[in-house]
Image 1 (cartoon, rainbow, N blue to C red):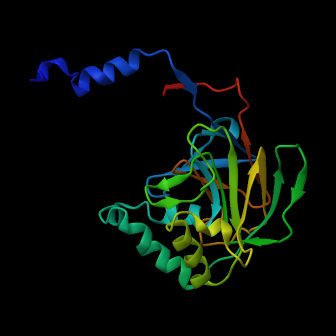
Image 2: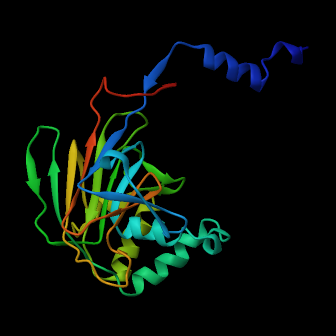
Amino acid sequence: TLDPHSFPTRRSSDLSSLSLTSSRPLPHFLASFSSASLLTNEGRTSTSLPNNELAGYIVASYGFHSTLVADSDTAELRRHGDKRFGIVAGELLGDPHRYRAKLTLTGVNGEEKVVDRETHAYILVTLVSNLEKTFTISPHTTPLDEVMRIVHFDSGDGEEIMGVMKDAYSGGVHVNRSDGLVGYEEVERVRVDFGEPEVEGNEGKWLRVCVDGLIVRVESGGWMRVEKVKRGGEVLDIVV
């Protein structure tokens, strides 16, 4: 017979894992801005961002994703849990906004290129594969692979944008679309030069970016730079 007391409890197993010396640095990026303010209290409070910088470990975005996160962050909508994103998405996709910006990508070889379009629906830089359990935004990413990738596309068609999102929920097949709509590549650095005008009364609705869930208000004519922190510059190790 087996003695149940001979097996480690979950707690003792967890403590044993923490005592192991095997660890890996947690990759992260630095998001820098020409000028930016952190929005809190459902967007009603604006606080200057120290040094105009934020460190991130998951995602930096501009366009549909950042507006979706910002608009869904209200006490009323949070009562709906994850369903709040679908509620806001339906409103945004009724008449999709095309975000004016210049997008410049720097690849792993140091080569710089400007994406050949003046408007964008979606710009998202990430170090992880999934933003939700079933939302695979970067299917080529593996845990702690230290690779930063960007997903970007433009569309003024709400059904088309939703189609890309559904493909992401279907195992990340959006990056293999036959129409070539979605750009997906490994990058070392991304720069977004904002071309959206300041419009009185809209409180900078189209000039908000998202960094790991935080909403940052940027300036018209300003810029955001997202740069992967090189190996050796990480500030946090995790047990693996």
